Amino acid sequence: MGDGDVAISEHDRYELHKWLVDNAGERVAETLMAHLPPGGWAEVATKRDLEHIETVLRLELRAASSELRGDFHDLRGELHQLRADVNDKLRSHLVGLMGLNISLAAALITFLR
Image (cartoon, rainbow, N blue to C red; front, side):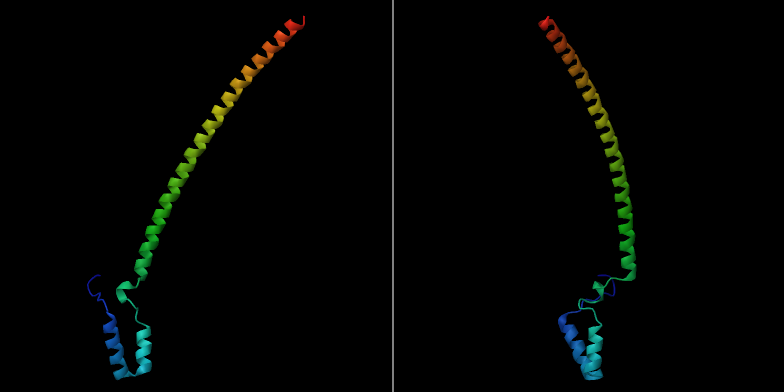
């Protein structure tokens, strides 16, 4: 807690309520007590607190978004390379299979003669 932040105990709240009832009446005491935060003012977020959190969250979101875009760009590059590698392997296997088929056809022709 910073300077001026005072923790208010349940006993303090009770004493305040009792004093208010004695000096201002039950209705005023209840109204005033209803407007006091249960944990004290140190627990209440200010507009400045919320603006700070918003700024921090925006910066973190911007950084995460930038990192995600970079990761996506890297992934696209890796997928492009994977596609090229698969195509190369398929061409290589296709050429091998074509050679095998030609060899089998030649052997079959030789056998049938």
